[in-house]
Image 1 (cartoon, rainbow, N blue to C red):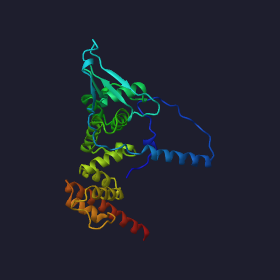
Image 2: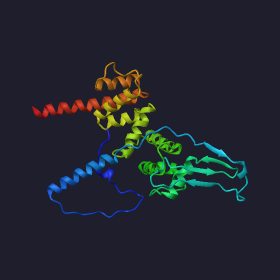
Image 3: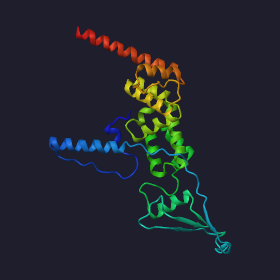
Image 4: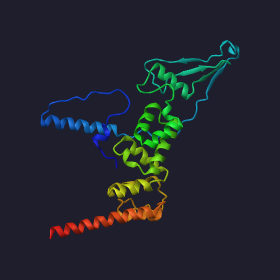
Length: 285
């Protein structure tokens, strides 16, 4: 279902460092090699971001030393960080000494801030970018800059960060409501959007868009995935068979939330397909 369109994958980004184009004189054989490299890179760039449940907060107290209560007259917290090169951002030991003498493991927002200070990730901000505040986020959604939001969210947050999940969920819901799926085609986020709609049983708008676009095999694939994720659904066939028009019609009749919409789209597709076949027969005679 995920298509490869070079212009979408390698488009100029509105953020980050600008790179100058490189021009080369190549033989036909060298050009084919470069195209193959670009295609392999495109497959890597289309890998969907991980989908994880929201993480719980870290509330682990290591010790309580009452003798240290009020020791610092400024009531400051002290952060102790293991900056050994053989540790990672995920397993690095970071602890916080509270003004009242409590020694605890750093909470998630503290870990991310400290990791970014010692081992900065290019493009990631220590302070939450304003674009993710509700007002600014809504304005960006209204402009249709979905890819910009999702790319930036992947850079700024971990995939199990509740704020990342909130932002991506809001973006997916907005796209689904507007039926504006084409702006994520041939991006790494189209798979994530599709998966979100599948697990939340909201594929009707996407399925209609696919049928109207005459990508009937993709429609079959989407229904097949729906059967896998929702094995108790009414339209799932008794045997593991490939989805065809009949199975698609069964989904529309038995499980769709908007059967009228999908029936209309499918009938238009079938009618157009039938007319094209008749024209081909006439041309061949």
